[in-house]
Amino acid sequence: MAYLTFRVEVTRDETRAAVPPRIEITAYIDRIPETDVPERGRLSRAYTDVWNSRLRYAGDFESLAEALAAIEAAYPEADAIRCYEYTVDDEYPVEKVMLGRIDGRWVPRQPRS
Picture 1 (cartoon, rainbow, N blue to C red):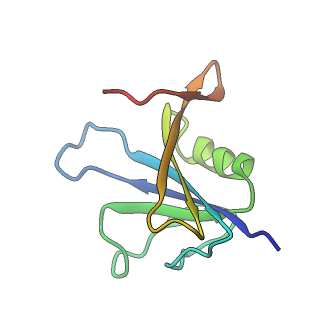
Picture 2 (picture 1 turned 30 degrees about the vertical axis):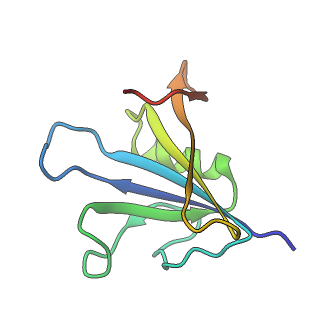
């Protein structure tokens, strides 16, 4: 049986207050995430005593649409999401094409240099 979880993580750069948060989605395919997240189905504040203090919010979702809806609700100004895929055969997550928001829709785009 196939197993799929979309983990969203929102981090901040502690050295620059004006920089928007970094948002990432990792698709765990036939692999269970190694660390536990406080909530399933919504973004919630990460525990600072367990997580690196840069991690602000995290959540696991059953579909990409649910993950994107949670991001849009929490960060309506977000315009880019880094994407990764982590399968049972991979030692580390593999970076995929980034998502960018154009006319209110999330579409694949090349990362900024």
